Image 1: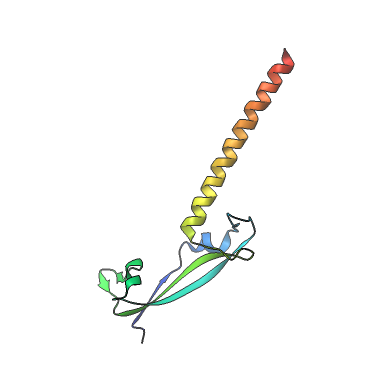
Image 2 (image 1 turned 135 degrees about the vertical axis):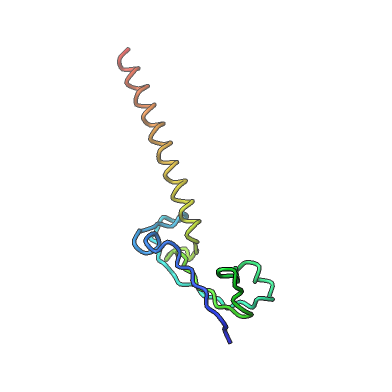
Length: 113
């Protein structure tokens, strides 16, 4: 019998209202609810936090969290992974814009000569 339930909804606005694309295939992602019942003395318990406000939840806990799932390639991503991927995509876009701007300036300078 499950003694406690621990939910992690993440940033609800980021998870539910914003549209995200798969970092691999660039298709639209959907939000999927994930659940897992974990015993405190099992090996996989190291991956989960059994404390809430410095109180232990008990022996068997049901963990609930949300992830992004790609509809085409069936890969799952956490909120942190999607944020990191979007951050790197923005950096790459800025870098590409700078390179293109430099190329346009160089081409304009050649035409002036």
